[in-house]
Length: 200
Image (cartoon, rainbow, N blue to C red):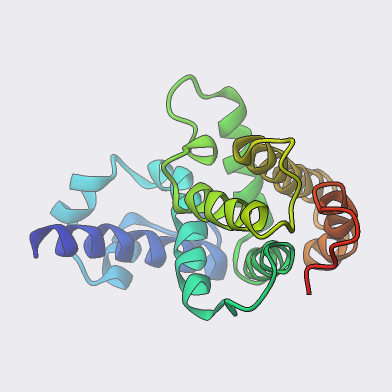
């Protein structure tokens, strides 16, 4: 029970922070406002985070929460290829509609220079576990090629998604991230599909 409470408290703080960051900007959001929005205490906040800056690395947690929601919504009848496209479309829609591009850029830049934990590469994340599951199923059903390991395909897919995010940030969001990915991701994934298998 305590573990669930602990997880919920940290999760509420993260959700509250990113909601406020999007609505009023990172610089104009205070720790006190985050605490009020999360309906928690100052002691609880500082138990999990040293300060506001520490919340920047939690964006990957927000992504994983979205994946957790999608796991319940995804149609099990979809092929592995369709599931990957669906997850990408839903995540990139969320990013475009609720994550300020300057904060996404900050997260990506910190991942380049940090010497410690790189949250986007954390293989214990739900993101990687879900990708592993979908790709393994795709190989077992003959939808995806088997001459590459599950890990190799997962890594390539993750690199592709990150490259879209980096370019979108570098371009200042001058195009729709979701629309661009909808057009280009199928081209990228085509090489991983078994020839002649439409996945439908």
